[in-house]
Length: 88
Image 1 (cartoon, rainbow, N blue to C red):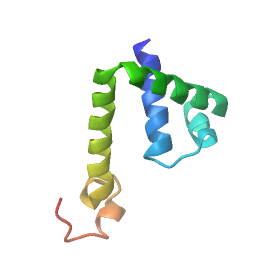
Image 2 (cartoon, rainbow, N blue to C red; image 1 turned 90 degrees about the horizontal axis):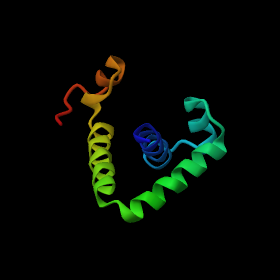
Image 3 (cartoon, rainbow, N blue to C red; image 1 turned 120 degrees about the vertical axis):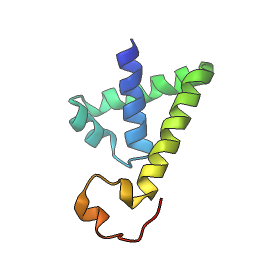
């Protein structure tokens, strides 16, 4: 059950924050795009009743935002070299 929720959160974040399509997410996770759509729908239903779950997702989104906006946190050294004076 917990694994399913984690997977639904990952699908939703990849869609909303990562800008990937349901098809792209499905290919990454080895499922059909309809599974992605259904998983996101189920997550939205759970969020209506689960304040704790909502807080977890907001915290993850905030962390992703920091990573996305700070080139020094990018995994690729070639990306980091493009921003030698960046301070995050």
